[in-house]
Length: 507
Image 1 (spheres, rainbow, N blue to C red):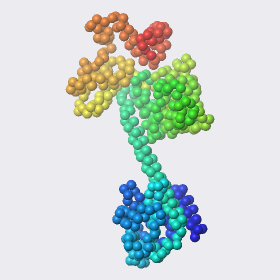
Image 2: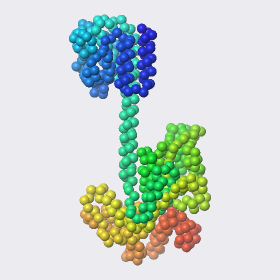
Image 3: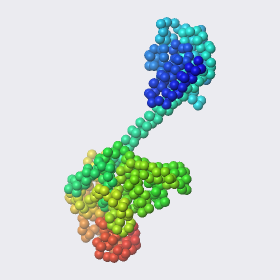
Image 4: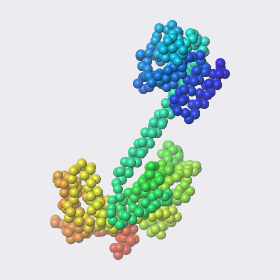
C-alpha cells in the first residue's frame, strides 16, 4: 500500500510541472485517488469567490455533476466537511443527505446507502476546495490511515493553488497585453498625421517607406517644429516592429549624472540612491525601437557607450560587469547640423556615421507653402473635435495671408497661432476666424507691425532690443541653432553675436 501510494504521489507531483491544461491536472489527481483508496466514486471541488463549490474533476460519477454548482448550505455533508480541517467520515446510516445519491456510475444506481469521506483543502490557512470519496461498500474507509488521506488532501490543495496562480498569471498577461496594445494604438492616434500634398512631403513619405521595413539606423534632421517626432512614429508604424513599443528618450533632458543609468540601467548599490536594480531605456526597447530625440545634445562620454551598443548589440548596467544583449532599432533626431558638430569636435565622427545610415531631412514650412491651407484645415479640425463644434473655418483671405507668411517656428508655430485665434473666435461665439483674432501680424512687412511702431510712448532702446532679439532668434532657427552660420548670415562677428544674444536672454 505504501509503495503504491508513494508512486501515485510521485506521478501527481511530476504532473504538476508538466505543460497540461487545468482539467488534465485535476483529472490526474482524481485518477490517483482511485488507484490508492477503495472508492467507487470521487470528486474534486474548487471554492470560488462567491462561496460556491465548483466540481472540476470526477470519477465514477455522472459527468452531469461537472455542470452543477453546489451551495454548501444546501448540502449538509459538504458544509460539514468545510467546517473542519480534519478528514470527515460519514457512515452508511448517516441521516444527512448525500449530494451524489443516485449519481454513482454503478449497476446498483438505485442504491443510495453508501460510505462517504470528505476533506477540506487548505493553503496557508485559506480554504480553496473540497475532496470527496464515496464507496458502495459499508465501512470501506474505516481502516484508512488518516495521514494518507491528509497527504493526498495537501497535494490536492497544492494542485488547486498552483493552477489558480497559473491561470491568474495568464489572465494578467492577457490583460496587460491588451492594455499595451491599446496604449500603443492611443499613442499613435495622439501623435497625429503627416499632412501635406507638396512635392517636399511626397519625397519625405517616399524616403520613410524606403527605409521603414529595414532595421537600419535612421537619422532625422530638420528645424525645430517641423515634425521630426511624427516622422519617427511613421517609421516605427511601417516597420516589422510595429507591434512593439517605441521608447522615447529626450537626450537634451537627460539629468546630468544619471544619464548613463537612464539609458543603460543600473544595479542595486551602483551609486547613492540606487536602492534597486533598474532596467534602462535600451532594455525596455529590446525587440522594438528606441527613438533618441535631440541626439546632438548627448555628452561625448555617453556617445562612446552608445556606439558600443550600436556596434555590438550589448550593454552593461551601471555598476555591473555583466554584458546584456539587446535587439533595438535606433531612430535619432536632431535640429543641429551634426556634420558641423563633428568638425567642431562636439560629436563623435564614428557615431555620426553609424547613425547616418539613412538620413531623412524634414523640410521647413518655408519649403512647403502649398501645404499651409491643408495643415490649417487639419489643425482646426482638431479644435472642432475637442470643443464638439459643428462648424469652424477660417476666412479665405486670412488663409491666403497665412500661406504667404514666413513661419520660423514651422508647424508648431502655425498650430499654436491657429489654436489661439480659434479659441478667441469660439469665445465670441463666432464660427469664422478673421484676421483680428490673431495676435501676430499676418504679413512679413515690418511697417504693418504695431509692435515696432507703437501708438503710445515707449523707449526706443527697448523697441530696438525687442527687434534684435526676434531677428537673432529667427536667424538661429533658420540655421539650426548654429551661431557661426547665424553670424555669417547677419554679417557680424560670431563672438559679438553670441554676447549680444546672451545679453538679450537668448540661450
